[in-house]
Image (tube, rainbow over all chains, first blue to last red; front, side, top):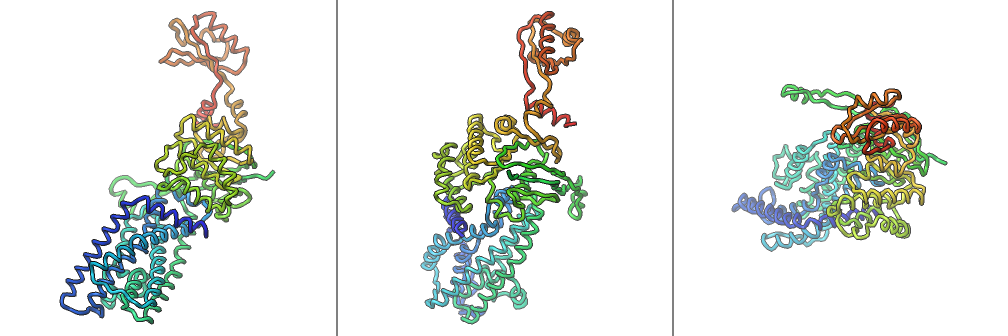
Length: 263
Length: 335
């Protein structure tokens, strides 16, 4: 376990090594939150509520969804693709650790870094500019914490899956991009799932994406009752378990037919 | 003594895809692709004893790196048996890799953006090295490789020679009994090369570390290895001491002559017609080289004949260098 914790530390150091990335990240997220805030204000117009959500709940939803994204989002699929394409994965395989586990830890290191140096200060700033509503109920915060950790796991697992496909496709830049758009849309980052047409909601219920952004954001804005929240968290947990299987299977196949590119 | 490496009938095949030509071909490639199965390593067997230093040589694409990757558990063999340090490399990968050290000359295993010592610290945790072990062993390694001043620099700011020394130190953090070096001296200057060679000799003596080395720089092999394994087209074509390779393949000697007067090849051939000598002319420097058997009397006879007839400016007797021997073998193949 020591080595995995050390990896988180290394990732912290790496994030600090690239400060510009960090600052531009803050800028991009602020612009996104601002844009969606104004978009939603325009859509609401004079109305008090749409689909049971008030304007304030909606702006909180948008802000939280983006701030949570800073925590669960990572580029380990792209990193894996690069490592496989350049043949660096050979070096990873001669180390006595689980490659996928290490990658997850790198993602977590990145996530924790962003949570403390990016999401929390960002959220404080945003709350001065836009009217947001924070829950005073500690159970909401607890549910939110558990939920966001699970969304990190689901998102990372999907990233791992996408990353592993590089072993078979050799170049999967397109797939990685498609995945990103699919997650942003179907996870409820851009539009809450409750705004989707009913048939789409029915389909999305059977997919893991809403566990990434929709669930934690709905919990944070108090749009879920306690019961609904618990159910949603259980669903997230189930998806984490389900996703382990295809990852393991693909990983075993990938290792068997691995070709190290570039000699 | 136990064998560090045992390889029996090892084989690795790759699918080599070929693209059809033209636009039409490209569209057909979308649906079905042509491929043939190419053996990169074809039925090789060898043993390496603990404490041996073995040079593993061959042309580009002969299958050296593929073999190393199978021995280190990165690639799964198509068939055959590999036992390294008493384990099957791709079965118990995590346990196995903590008993080996690997340096890929063309690939860095340090983290690019962070200081060298942070990489070392992570590797120390990864290999579960205790502080005492680390201090006693690594202090020495760091001193010998002279990398103390580099430790707080990020890897991307190091020169190739500096990085390579750090790579070597990183591969030795857990003091492995077996070390794989895949072209460790590629692109390094003479001084760094010498330092690395000295260091490898030292750890081999001190810890009885087995070293398997692939390189294109034969002076590395000459300096370090008593035994060479030569690979061509995925097959072992020579396995034995470097000395006997030289004796077997480098029988001839070369005698270089420079003359004061204009000389023709035919003149020389006439002079030495009685003995078996092959003459060659280097048209730039006007150096004539006689290739002959390694026989002292024959050589002195040859020189006597030439000197008697022509005015000589310079004579140089050379033994065939290892490089030349290897080149001959690559060119003609062994047989």
